Image 1 (cartoon, rainbow, N blue to C red):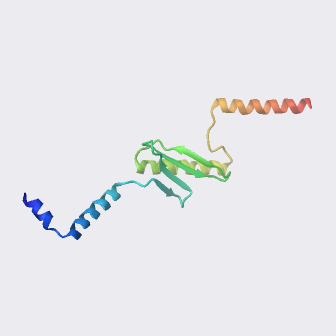
Image 2: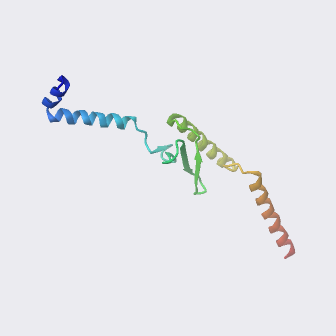
Image 3: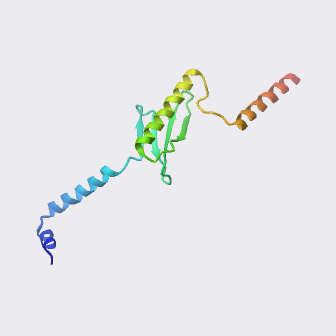
Length: 124
């Protein structure tokens, strides 16, 4: 038996429990939260179980949840990116602009649908 084993056997049980609690607390301090609320709870930052990157979601005046990837693995960088996205979406909403850019295919589909509606109304 070595000296460290002898000391451990003679230690009181409460010291062993205290040491295990300290290890548990230390490991909790190193873990990152699974969900983080920002901007008074209006912006939610989270990480999906199978992803290293953080995601964010927020609700605008239209009542729908808008979800985006921050493309960041670091919590500090993800917070900054999520706040920027939220601020830009709110600013664009105040100006009456679309909060999300559309692709050419989406714009073409919307335009075609509007043209078809005008043609059917003109024929009727």
